[in-house]
Length: 489
Image 1 (cartoon, rainbow, N blue to C red):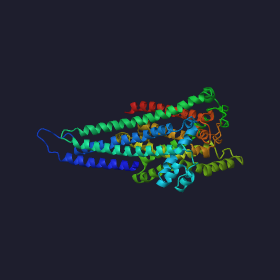
Image 2 (tube, helix red, strand yellow):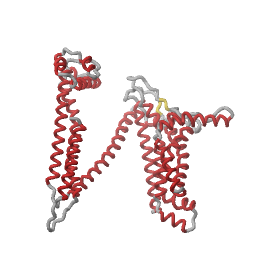
Image 3 (cartoon, rainbow, N blue to C red):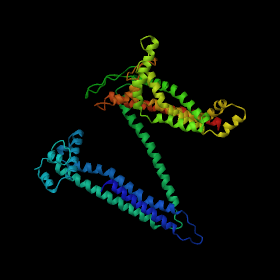
Image 4 (cartoon, rainbow, N blue to C red):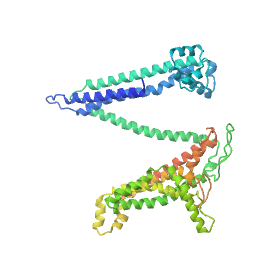
């Protein structure tokens, strides 16, 4: 039975349990001196929870662990000389066995007999059934494939039966104990509380897992490259080595990449923050309701445009335009290249405008109206009210919006690739090409490379560097938010 059918049956059992439990709770007759503890909806929800969640948890754990057990059992059944092969050969062997086992489900009994007796050409026979097999396999793969198929079918059957029976048992438990004093509401709220805790734990563990995965690979990288060469090096020249050579040569200076990342992000913020913030002030304080209903959605449309489209726009339009303008101003020799920091920063700034404007508008609109009216009542003009009252009160939220915008700018890749190039160099001229950390992470992980060479592992060092930068930005923003919140609350 397929996974979708099992989940559908469990869901149906849960819905039926909810409806029956709710109906039974609604028909409970009141007794003298005894009040009903929970509403009928809570009784139904509790029966629904008992019927669905334990069954789904059981089914999920079974489906996650059974392939590991089956893989281990099939591998142990193979001949000793096969099991002594390398990990790469093991993956190839097990993949062929699984393909044969899955393909045998499409064969007739007569064809299965031919396969077992070794009289059939597996590759041609499976091709006629739409199953691609790289080779005809070895003789020992046939019984292993049948073993795999038998265990997989049994596992699917028993997981489905167990999940459905567990769902029925949960529904029966939820329906059997419906009384006036049953604390169904407390049970439902307790389940919701643990669900929220589990969701928070998953988010935290995911973050910890990401950091640890980067950290371990980074430590491996620093075993080949000294810390000083990475953090204080001014030359980026990884010089990819051939596979198998170890690739210990090359220079991995972070400074050019870090400078390019911060420089392009700075240009983007210098363009996006004034435009976005002024747009937010206009929409929240000056624009009529009709104008606001049109302007705000149009600005937010910019956030939905894919970044690759912005990159093409920068490569085809903005870059050549800036180059031609600079050539006209200088009398022939352009001082702004088509791929440059200025090109990437301007286009990225356009992309960031809706982040600043939309978030800042929501923050400014949430400032208490009493502050606004009180300032106007004291004789201040609208602009003085915005400058001296609204913006200081909304400053903590605006700082958060700018932090989000800066993080978005630092993590951008496609616009930089197309608009700023991939040249890792140090320069203060915004008209020249530079690159960022994210672009080099993509470059180092692209292609058929060994995952043990410094040229590949440096991507993890770059990634954890970005993580530390954004963490520092969050800490700084939290300090600013707390400082001004104490002042204006």
